[in-house]
Amino acid sequence: MRKVLIIDDDVAVTNYFMVFLVQTGLFEPTVVNDSRQVEDLLARERFDIIMLDMDMPDVSGMDILRAMRAKSDTTPVVILTGVSDLDLAVRAMKLGAFDYLTKPVDDQNLLQVLENAIEHRSLHLSIDQLPKELTTKDLAHEAAFTQFPTQDDAMIRLFHQAEKLAASDVSVFIWGESGTGKEALARAIHQASPRKDGPFVVVEVDSQDPGKFPAFFFGQAKDRHGSHEETPGLLEQADHGTLYLNHIGDLSLPMQVKLKRLIQTGEYYRESSTSIRTADVRVIVSARRDLTHPEYANRFSRDLLYHLMINSIRIPPLRERPGDIPLLAERFLKEESERAGKSITGFSKECLNLLVSYHFPDNVQELITIVASAVANADTDTITVESLPLFIREHIGRGTVADIFKPKRLDAVIREHVRFTLSYFGQQREAAAEALGITPGEIDRITAEDLSEE
Image 1: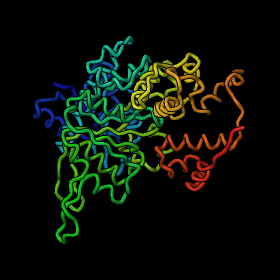
Image 2: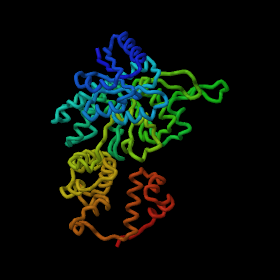
Image 3: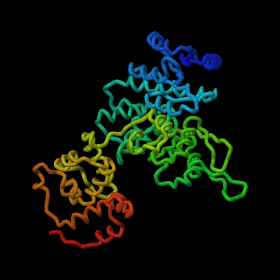
Image 4: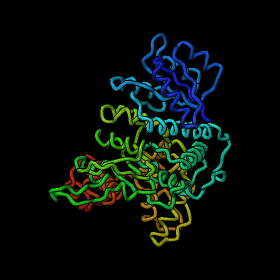
């Protein structure tokens, strides 16, 4: 049985919890009504989970939580609070509390939160106990991560963390710069999970009309006036599989509330319906930055934010793992050469050195685009520096520019850069124009000009 410590100065509340938990046959509760006794008790005994009231005399729940974290005590803590103290609960979650419950507590919700907390503790203990020396060969589902050739220790450890999370049904938050491979990692988690034979459904949150998104996501019920037909949403398409929401920071606040309910209980409503439906899905979300970043201030529910941050994975940018650049470049070269019908065997040493020194602001996705461009420009069976886009060649610097750089007219440089940007965005003029800070009409004018280079 799991040992649960219940800390609350209200004797009636602790008596109720104690009786209820004993009756489940799953938990062994210990009750403390005087918060001054907690420090000595925690020094003597270990618990699987702690239920902690926030509003207590002498020593507050927040004081107890701070003291636990100062001692690196990672026991999952479930906050007990009144409806009027939700801000306090959120502050506690920022300090590392697992979740919160508002009084009066629903019995089934209590059991679900306790089970989730225990699963979380077991999961993260196993992650923390991973050996320091790891390889991809140690992965139980190595094939799921083959999209990420790597020799970087941080990436390999990231794969092992992802595989541990994949084994459970917990929601996962993946964050990292644009182009780092967030969707690819989400797919890897899906492939390494018991849901691998189920669907993997992608939702691009930032591309949806906020007003129409609830019906698009949850589905639409047929109303009695016949103005709406019965329409299933993307959520139902993901049944028994994984639902991946990219750009989660752009989700509207009302949808964030509904998403948290879905993650916690599996319950939702179709639009225009009062009938509760259930979904058997695993939720993975992603964003460019940690959700505590100022970019998301006043745009993201702190309640959902800290719930998602419990199981988060940061994908490091390519510039933090330069040793992976040759591995990735060779892989992309093979793919792009086959696609172009060319027999290109590799990169020159100077070319690889240049790629490794580049900072890749758009990460892996940019490397793919650069290799594709180089393959298109290559006239031999080896990619040389001259085959790379101009802006990469000009990056050499530090006394070596003279070896590679050939002066060009500025308008020719601009045209080449605009064409490369168009290629990067799949010839989508509006997206390229926004990135360049010009109008689609100016793109047409620049790319249409036939300029000779002097």
